[in-house]
Image (tube, rainbow, N blue to C red; front, top):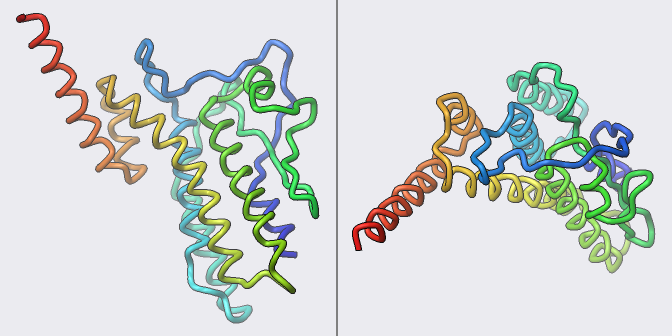
Length: 219
């Protein structure tokens, strides 16, 4: 049952790729391109899911009901983006048991192939791939465990796998912010995502780069 839940945690709705589709950098900085609403929605949802796996253990049905209600409240506070034909949800990966084999979406068998045939942000694809790969490694390590997987370990592994997805997106966002001045809307979205520290560091990096450019011109 726990391994079934793990596969559910990996999955989002999958839209069949079109032949002319190709993932794009939604936080691209060559040239500077303000990340779309969908980028921040996906990042915030991943962070909310990671926090959910950090909630105290549910000891009974009442605790479970309260925990589920808290998770739903966390999800609902993030407004969904307006309908947008281009930006589709992340792809769906799964882990085949008991081989612990990473299974790609239908019609693909590599990350490069998926990036070339998916109509979404490349950061979504790479983030979900990182999540699935970490889950695959956990699957392999769990093979030495006799009996059911301890609840605490199961929750920790789900949280850490999600952190891999979050790290990919936050790194991409940090690289964008270090090279490009964010618009007022992007700046607000960064703050709403709980990334004030990332924004401050990116601003320092951007100012340091500008100062170096000024010095080089003056020489």
